[in-house]
Length: 97
Image 1 (tube, rainbow, N blue to C red):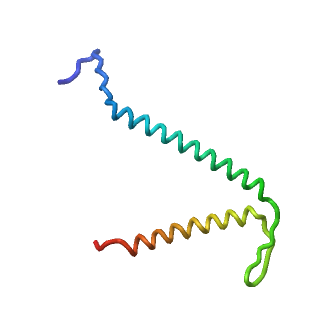
Image 2: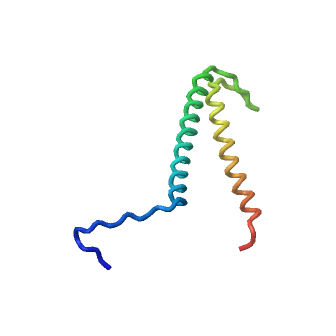
Image 3: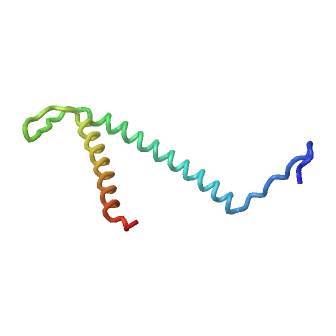
């Protein structure tokens, strides 16, 4: 049962399925890395191209701000509203426990 000292263990044979899963996971990681780099480059270009001042009119006043801040705040607000909407829909359509 036990191995004697000095004896080497035989390597466990990896099945084709397990090897495919391992390589598929690695490919997914590389794809995620490429997408993350593309998004980062896009954001840098977005910031560089949208630095001019724009007038923002509110109901009770107006202000001048950089266009990029308007884009970033709108994106964050949309993201948060999407999360809240998804939570409310999932909570209200969930089956009884």
